[in-house]
View (cartoon, rainbow, N blue to C red):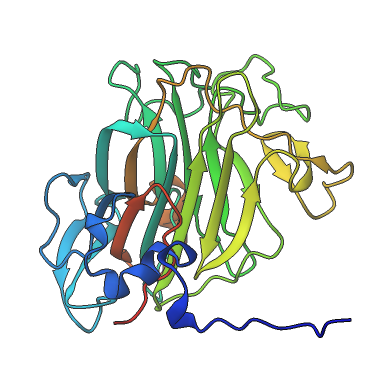
Length: 319
């Protein structure tokens, strides 16, 4: 019998295909020129086109003591009794079928967690509601419809990172079976989280990345996944994970997960003309839910090193 030979390949000999996008571009230098990248910024030059600021509370900050790298980053503030925060959005109307978004975030030590956070969405200009106005409604899945998912941080020390997701086959909060009982606003975002979600960290930079892969029309081969600090936390696709649908949530742990079955996959759309073509940094603190709990008048989050691409990006690699 021949002896078993172990082949050890030095890291420096790995091909570009074996490395994450961020590993191929240390410090994110030159990453915007990669064919898989739709958009990238380290905010050193501020917030410029094609980015657009919506709502109050957004400023381009120059402070090397706060920024992840260099001096530039984005600060978004929700001020008590004044506004509910702000957004920075990106539109790329050609759209893609698979999209990753990676951005570093830092929560101020005293801030509350937001009502909504970072988002990838697909809709065409003909969609009736476009930005806003669609809360509580199930969107169509065709060319003039909408699909989108939002990555949201834990709402407290025992909370979980999760997806909050809209698509044409979403479940309702109104009945155990996930169907509408006829009342208004029957469909809010569906919830997806995992028991192994990392704990909430404040006053430190966190690498957040998430992905949405659209389905082949007529099939349930759509996916979504997210990573925190480079660790895969949850990946929902045909056959995995196992869980139980209860109202508007796919439960993978806890007392509600009484009849776990493999996840069916996502039928995100019925027409391939519907693409992922918008990204948004959101910092939205609902006044009705948040203001009474606020310890401070200003609730702040910082954002830096944002990349939108069609492949996995990964955490920033030092030069």
